Amino acid sequence: MGRTWNQFLLLFWKNWTLQSRKVILTIFEILIPLIFAALLLIIRSYVEFTQYESPIVYGSFSVDSLPSTLLPPNVTNSTLPPYYWKIAYAPRGKAADDIMDKVVESLTNDFPTLRPVQLEKAIGFDTEEELLAVMKLASSENILGGIIFKSGFPDNGEGIPANLTYSIRMRNSMRNMEKQSSFMTQWQTQSLFPFYQLPGPRNKDDMYGGVPGYYREGFLALQYAVDMAILRANGVTPNHVTLMQRYPYPPYFDDTYVAVLQTTLPDLIMVSLVLVALGIAKNVAYEKEKRLKEAMKMMGLANWVHWLAWFVKYFIYLTITISLMTLMFCVKVGNLHAAVVTHSDPSVIFVFLMLYAMVSIMYSFAASALFSKGILNGRNVIPSGN
Image 1: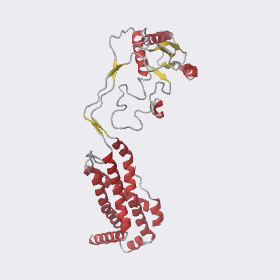
Image 2: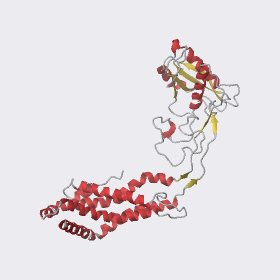
Image 3: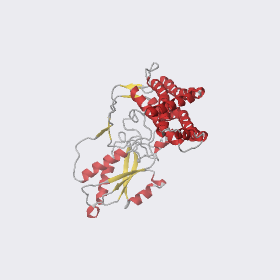
Image 4: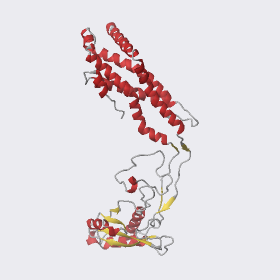
């Protein structure tokens, strides 16, 4: 055990002696992570945030009529209300016709001032394919959407099943679109959440829910009208008023800096340690290239002692850098009295960065085993930050 310990101390001294002869490289290996950390700290001092101490509560709204801004394409400035849409459905039959007549009735009235946008009539088709083929034509621009009854109707289309399912087919692009990005001009039904999310509620100032516009495009009004029509067709008379309301949002910090940091911090940490990782792989491979490792093994050096000496050397070396990075990440600066990671415990940040540093060391060890020349190895090893 004493011999092994002496071997370890000798190798440890040798590694630090080699490092001390590379003064400029050592300075850069320490300064580069600190420069990136300082850059984040400086940006933090200029980016303001807003603290919402009270929950955001939205008002309620009715969906018993089409939105007044959902105008058909044939409407001009000289056109007076009411403005009429058509609705398609399939398959047609006595029961389906009765349901759709009630849908048109519920979305039509004699007061165009109160409800300027209404349904004119329902157009029935035998199959869903026929309905979709017509809706794809340019002449179908005044068709708001299509109702597809999936369950089918018993008794040759005259009866209504106990569990009637249907789907609403709207136009693929928005008709009543506000100023939004082109990415959100479609329904994006394949996603449950936006691709890129910011802190706080989505569409904070829109009581109707915002994009993709289920209220604004008339989807909610159609769904509510069809549901009520099915109830009435089954002999049920609704005696209640249905209102919708967005879920309230709890108090939160509106800090765009955090959203940007979520995507940039892993890359910055990776770039900060790239130079150190390259040095590790290059130095280990250089000993292999010069046959120094084999010579030491012939003199009785255990293989694990060789790797342990390198690991401990760089572990201590990176501990200094990680400690300074943690300090710069957690110190609060400026009038905002905020840090790069304001609400994170410094000990957690330190442990996280140290684990990343340990993985980087071991990754560089693994990469050095694939090469036999130090210069070539140093050019080809880049640790992944993700």
